[in-house]
Amino acid sequence: MDASALSPETLQKFRSNFYADPKNILAQNVCTRIDPLDVCLSRKHLEETQHVFTHKVETEAKPITNQKNTGRCWIFATLNVIRIPFMKQYNLDEFEFSQAYLFFWDKIERCNYFLTNMVKTAQAGEPVDGRLVSFLLHDPTCDGGQWDMIVNLINKHGLMPKKCFPESFSCESSLRMNAILKSKLREYTKDLRNLVSEGVSDGEIRSRIEQQMADVYRIVGICLGIPPETFSWEYYDKTKQFNSVGPVTPLDFYVKYVKPYYNVDDKVCLVTDPRPTNSYGKAYTVDYLGNVVDGRPIIYNNQPVELLMKLAAESIKSLEPVWFGCEVCKRFAGKQGIEDLKVHDFKLVFGVDVTLGLTKAERLLYGESMMTHAMAFTAVTLDGEGNPTKFRVENSWGDDRGEKGYLVMSSDWFKEFVFEVVVDKKFVPPEVLEVFSMEPIVLPAWDPMGTLAH
Image (cartoon, rainbow, N blue to C red; front, side):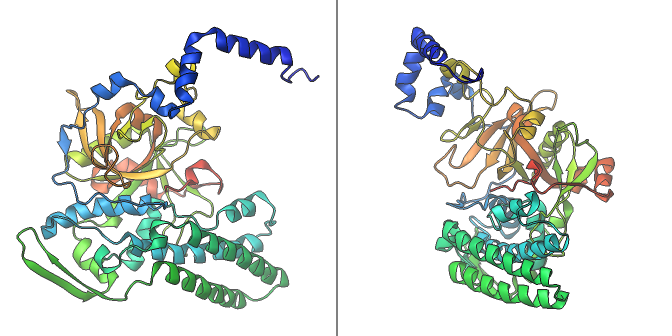
């Protein structure tokens, strides 16, 4: 027997040791009947956690949004942040921008971006079974995204109210539509690679992509509906006064009615990647990551996590909400809406700690951590020295978790599991803004910093 194989004697020792400890038997009795994470919840810590904060945005928006069974958190988080100053300006009780509108255009633009990249990889001689093309083909169109990707969509296609382009079945449950699109995109990739190998002209390739995109447009349009070219928006403000906007195009609606109060081009995205290979104070991008051909690239301005936390707090103190990306499900009590390193006591139940055995940098290196979700900060508590101790988080999972849809996050959790924040450039020191003018270092397509929030 190989020296590393588990012998019957070793397995018997494990079994005997397990049952020799009564605490293991108690933990087994409970965990075989109840969610293990619920078993690990610290009652004491739940008692100590309160949804009360020293600084809060002036008015939190209503209603709490719900992305349902989709990976649209990056869209929801952005629109949740934008609607706060918009609702204040137009004196609204409740309002939502159409998440379905941006979802529609992201599907169209991203499929075109993917097919364009498939041609580039073929022209570069990348084999179809090589790591790069295999990675890109694994998930040709997902729902997730990044900050620069939402900026591309808004600057090109604008915004509209949800009442003017509401949700559809595939908006709220995108699995079937995505499966159809993925099958067609892989089929189209084979077709395009054949054209490249045959040496046809660039014009012929562009013509073929246009034909393929006509099919994609039809599929997406059937599943999501097709947004109107112009719309009229009628609403009552808080004084019950009737108001009407339009007819107007979605782009003009953004430029005239939204941009003066929230300009996406005035916001900058800062990330924190502590891996030793990726220095702070430099710009990074991820190969083949994006959604709009000829749109702005994904640029990561890498800074220490303490700066991200400081700028997020400064924004909230100035009554401006903050878009951010994190790994949401680690040390997270979902029902209670608590993100805190002490909310679960894994060692008490299992005899070992979980997650924190590696540093943040090590978790990135070993596949244990990556950004998975985007949300919005709306409040912060500062201690006597002005340091953040906890944040209030607006999520997009409905109002039946946490405090009516809001979460509370400790500053220690922020340091371990938050990866990026978006703040107005007026809060950012000049030397940090200068990083955006640097030529970005290109990370490979499969790098964990290329993971999309969903």
